Amino acid sequence: MTPAHPPHNRKFSLSAVSLTKARPNKHDMPAMKAASRAIEDILVRSNFLTVAPFSWVTLILRYGLKNEDAPHYEKINKRYGDLPLAIEVDTHELLRASLEQLVLKFKLTALKALIHAGRKYERPIEQLEAELAKLNAST
View (cartoon, rainbow, N blue to C red):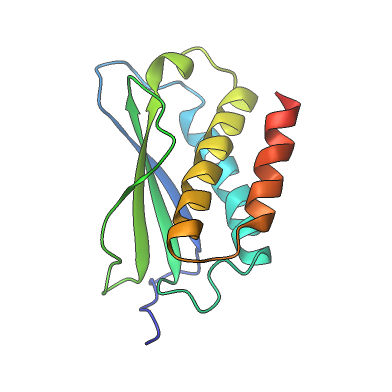
């Protein structure tokens, strides 16, 4: 069965919610946009979404007190066709980060979540793993 499609052409969406009272970093939104575009390009190139039970992926970053390695899953949205994921990141690491540091953190977190989801749904993850290794080597 072909999954439903969103009312837009996006293949990946990144957003955030605060679990603490800490104010978000001033570079939060620009970093999220940059990371989202970069990750979306990798998803499309890697054929992650080809013949998948979902047509796109949404990832919510939960600004909390720890860094999780695995995402939390919701059911695939039947109306919009997305795979909703959420993962907690440590707010303390984000508060004083530069734009470049935030983009890197968001990319690393998104790649970890997508690789986990790729294994669960038997999607091609080689390009995601290669990008994660490259980013980890640069830190």
